[in-house]
Length: 136
Image 1 (cartoon, helix red, strand yellow):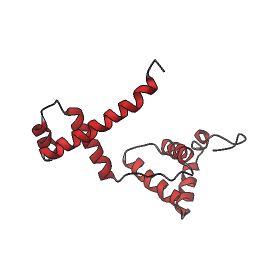
Image 2 (spheres, one colour):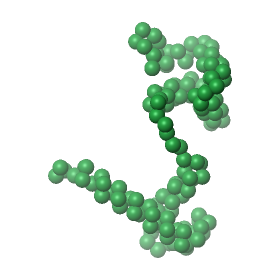
Image 3 (cartoon, rainbow, N blue to C red):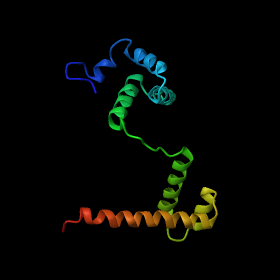
Image 4 (cartoon, rainbow, N blue to C red):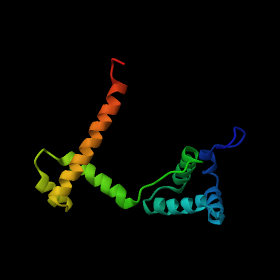
C-alpha cells in the first residue's frame, strides 16, 4: 500500500513507463513475487487483459494475500470439483446413465459424486441455516 503522501496505484499505472519499470523490477526479483507476477502477466496478456488493469489486480492480490501462505489446488483438482458440482446440479433423481455418458464416467462414479456433493451441500445448509435464521 502506498503512503498518503504518494500517488495511488491507479495514478501510477497511468504514468508513462511505469508498467515497464515494474515489469523490469519483477524480472530482476529472484523471489516468488517476481515469478508470480510474470506468470500471471503472461496469462493476462493471453486473455487480452489490459496491462494497467493487470497491475492493479496484482497489487490488490498482494494487498489481500500478502504474508499469507495459501494453497491453490492443481488445475485437475479444480476441474474435478467443478465436474462434480455440474453433475450434481444436472441430476434429476434418476439420470445417472445420462450423466455418466455425458461426463465420460461410470454410473457408480456419477452416484458417488452426487452423494459427495449432496452431503457437502446438506452440511453447508445445516451450518449456515442457524446463522441466517430470523429467530436468532
